[in-house]
Length: 243
Image 1: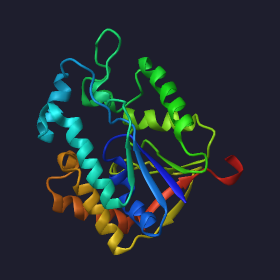
Image 2 (image 1 turned 60 degrees about the vertical axis):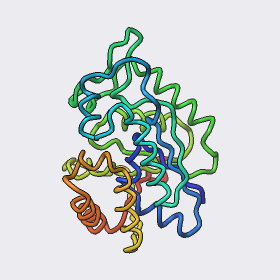
Image 3 (image 1 turned 90 degrees about the vertical axis):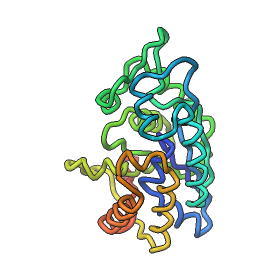
Image 4 (image 1 turned 180 degrees about the vertical axis):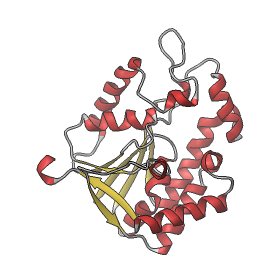
């Protein structure tokens, strides 16, 4: 089988389903992670919001290059091929007048800015041209409402091909009203080795650990707890009658 996972950022697939990719690769499936918002920022200064994130990550102005290198190491640990698209992260995107679309945390957890409709169309066209027609496509549910997750899901849902969904971790833990209905879950059990690979794939994204945890040990414990709670990793599909 050939699997293509769409990742909004350079850590989302590793965070959400890293152990599953390792299991698939171990059994001989071709697994790819296509990270959409992996492009270089446009020329010019960064917003104070972006600068603040760079400081927390410890990356300075090299944030995107550092994160791409982290993703390469993470994908290698999962046994997956990687592909980095040229769309910048939402914290770098601006309108034609040079004004940033998203200037603070509350801006990135909501609806896509109306000025980004052309970006959705452009991404849909790229995916339609480049996705292997027989690939099993897996896309984020966009739990938590991050605009880049919404971007990827919206573009993917304009394609005619069948798709599966993954729950965005750790946002799924905080969305207490999450119900997959009408989506049907399929749970893939994970071996101890798969969970270990999952932890290590997430650990490769060192600059991002502080976003959710205080240290690597806390992250590893959280991943193990999530895998135990879920019974592995779940992917979701529409019921057969609705596909």
